[in-house]
Length: 140
Image 1 (cartoon, rainbow, N blue to C red):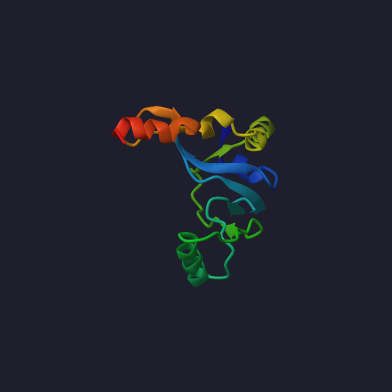
Image 2: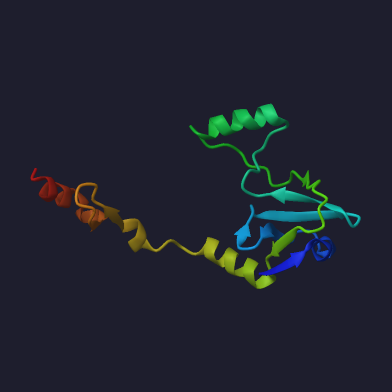
């Protein structure tokens, strides 16, 4: 990962993974699309890429997502439209993307899923022993 200024950023190719950056603060992760001359660019946000056609549908989808699964849309660009030349960008390099993909593809550690915290004594307990632990802990 490296930090670049806006002029360097605009020269980067499409599909560059980035976030806006100010000292020690990273914005949302995005995918860069085409640059608009030397002043602006299009991008694909990742965190809020909800499939919708307008603001009303976006709000409806967000409300729906609180109860059920909704569809995402990773082919919907937005224009930055912020013309300040002082903006910095955190840019992911190929090795960062490879490491991220590797992490996403990694099978979860079964031990992590097998440990549950007791709500009574806050001890970490193996899931297979949880019922017996709760019974002992609560004196049931």
